[in-house]
Amino acid sequence: MYMQRTIPRCCLGLLGLMFCSSTAWSADWPQWGGSDNRNLVSDETGLPDSFVPGKRMPSGGGIDPKTTENVKWTARLGSAAYGNPTVAGGKVFVGTDDLMLADDPRFQRTRGGLVKCLDEATGKLLWQLVTPKRTRLPEGAHFSHQHLGGCSSPTIDGNRMYVVGSAGDVLCVDVNGQADGNDGPFQEEARYMAGEDNPPVELTADDADIVWRFDPIDELAVIPHDAASCSALIHGELVYVGTSNGVDEPHAKVLSPLAPSLIVLDKRTGRLVATDDEKIGTRLYHAQWSSPSLGQVGEETLVFFGGGDGVCYAFEALSGPQPQPVHLKRVWSYDCNPPEYKLRDGKPIPYYEGDKRKGYSTNKNDGRYVGPSQIIATPVYCAGRVYVAIGQDPAHGRGKGMLHCIDPSGSGDITETGRVWTYGELDRSISTVSVADGLLYIPDIAGRLHCLDADTGERRWVYDTEAETWGGPLLVDGKIFLANKNAFFTMVAGSQPRLLSRTRLGSPAYSTPIAANGVLYVSSQRYLWAVRQDPQVAQRP
Image (cartoon, rainbow, N blue to C red; front, side, top):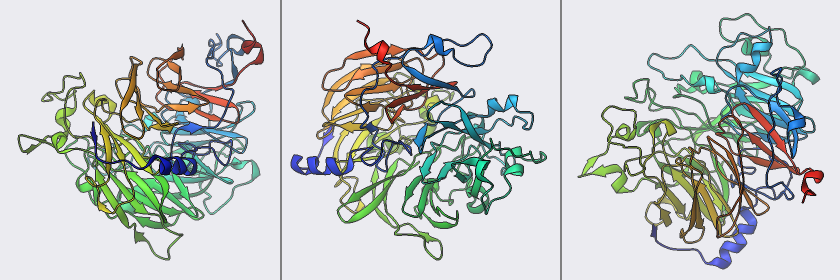
């Protein structure tokens, strides 16, 4: 761990009250991370220490509610769920794949995605947005993981949902679906949801109502790699979205190196307002998969963005839509790969040497491999600091990671001047941190949950969940909720590790749990559980 300087604790306390609460204004959870700063902390109380997910009904119709405990309702997803649910206005929004379309004769399965809108009280389907697979791509493109479905957490703003579809396009959708009519200007839902080369479907009240659509692939020459994963950030009248631009099929080069990594759209019309001008694609390791966050630093509102080049950027937030597209103004940059992660014997370390699957890789998958990584996690802004970790696609295996605590008050290249502390005793991580009560929690890919002093980076404890972990830890009412490939964990938050429960979900979980309106939402690859304390269960001796 390297520590350079700290912020006075009196300032930290004031800033923490201003910027660390994730649900200060609402009991809903309307976006990834709950709020603009993306800190995975909820103000909810009374959530249970454990739940029984139940058994599948013999008919295959879902979970038998009689076999569950502390479960309000369950909803069947497809065969994949990599995004995180959001809750707003009495509705639950969650992305999955299109396996559910097998029972709908109107649709042909395209190995694409689906966003389901559920009733918050009952879990019943209100409407669904089909995002078919894109097949027409430039030669060499490797946008092959669209079958993972909706990896973007829907962002809810008033009566609109903003989401990045599995095909890489940005969609603004009426939260009431087609039930209240087909709002414009977009009127091609029937053709869009049918998929390329298929006849238009007949729309029903159960279908989504797309208000506008912006396609970075057609409009900005973006070529995503594997999957589109960014979750939109709303600030004022604007939508900030990462593009998932990436490398080609043989992982040899970026096909569109000058395409933007971060774009800004008018949330009312979908018109392009701004792009970054950092040319991240010329330095991109693999793909641009991070989501933006927001924070007030002094008198400036900054947008924080983790680059696929391993650099964390801060941009000046725009005041509103501009007459013509502009470039975002970079305030600072911070290189999260220290020199020893990039150079060996004075020569650059090849990125894919760290991919355990490559025949020439020297990575033994034991967490000791040292090499460059990108930023896949979302930067979190809390108590006047930015926290972000580096990592790689989990398929690449384990390797040395690093967590950074950054002072965001500087300008220019702040790799040295903005370093508060670093923590290098963890594996690669794609997880977003949670910070509360002076402590920070982050899991690494190997499944070890690290608890650190948020002010100094000093390690308090490490708990090994013993399975691959992608999602972040949710902090609620003195508890830590965390899901991994094998189980769902509830732990006591604090300076000593204590496990409360470990629950098998029946299939892997790669997302982050959320809490809203007295309910905990937990999703596996196949089901979404709405978990709340049953008084009868709570009264048991």
